[in-house]
Length: 298
Ligand code: 13P
Ligand code: SF4
Image 1 (cartoon, rainbow, N blue to C red):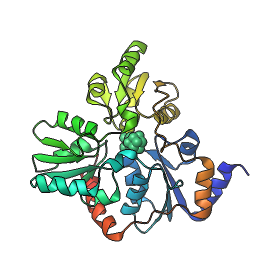
Image 2 (image 1 turned 90 degrees about the horizontal axis):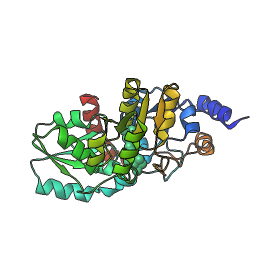
Image 3 (image 1 turned 90 degrees about the vertical axis):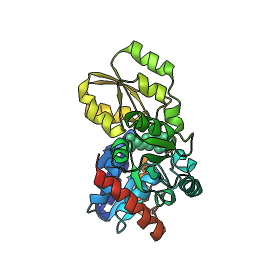
């Protein structure tokens, strides 16, 4: 039996749904019931009837699925697939910042640990960060851990004061896009779309700034696109829009997003590993902050 057939059979047997992020390997995206951005995966996890959710992504995505649907078994096929940026912010930093900014709201990017989310007023993703911050009544907003997403929000909401927490939190994959990448893209032609995790100077030089789900929604607007985000996005877009041209940067690889392979996915369903287990108090506090985000919408 081919491994893909084995995975399909196990999926039936376990009553499982496979959710995959847009950066996953092509062969994993092909096996998924739903491929999407962080917000789309969270909403799908909350609404699924399946008994088991296999989250092909990184740990904060699997944790978010468990927090939103605690009665389900949530599996992350590779135990140590994580987002390094999420670990740049600790609960201690949030407590300290709250003490020195008592009037500020705390908005945490979904790329954060469950323990940090439990201390947030509200969570956001790159798809809804602006809407989430606009929904708040405070002028001061502590926002972390991505300082580039914080700068993007600040640019669109000048009437608020967005305080990045920590000051230099960033994603190493998106931080590596340079003005030279922009220059090469302009020379090549087509539109330039970047993720808001890219630095402000890259955001300024792009035609469109969007989450990975936003890139899917923007794609019908042009025939040729330069995609400034993790290179897995190219496969996702090519599969959805086979007649269009998408240029990605081959070195823009998130090594954690690429950890899950077909044998890992198969083993995960066979052995029911690695199950996400969260402290119930942390989970219920984090859930309140994520639910507030979902109520605000995209
Ligand atoms: P999206 O929610 O836009 O898919 O972003 C997730 C992520 O980790 C980007 O690096
Ligand atoms: Fe984290 Fe960056 Fe990887 Fe996204 S691409 S999961 S932000 S390290």
